[in-house]
Length: 157
Image 1: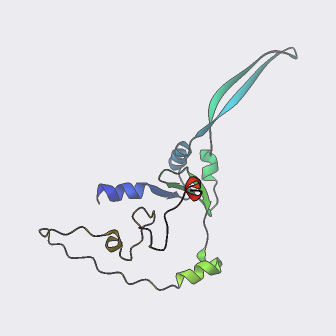
Image 2: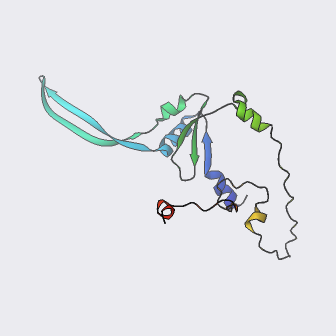
Image 3: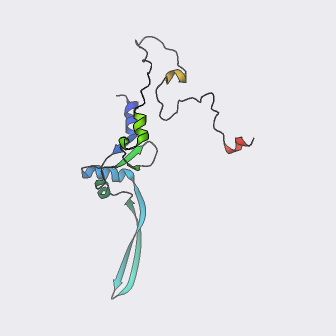
């Protein structure tokens, strides 16, 4: 496996309810903390003598809460997004998803043979993504009918 493939796999992770405390603790730490104040109060014979506050980190989702998640709950991590708490869905219970599942697959062109010696010309973006999906649309060109997005300032020029 190339390092690029491994990096891509690590950029998207789904976690279902963990069965061990180590995974729950790992998720608690990875999800992060929020700052909160802990208060203390000292009483002497019913009178307040001192009060203190100290700021401390509180987990956004404790390992105990993570271990008690239902079967339908998932914790997801994806690239530069914040962690997400999601609900699983059964595609069979949603008519539009069931209908989409019946759409036949597109016929993709075969990958070209590579003998290791031949110099290949650079392909255009359209040729490189011939039928393949670019989920981030980083390399998907604008169609001729589309115009580049305009800013508010460009619309008024």
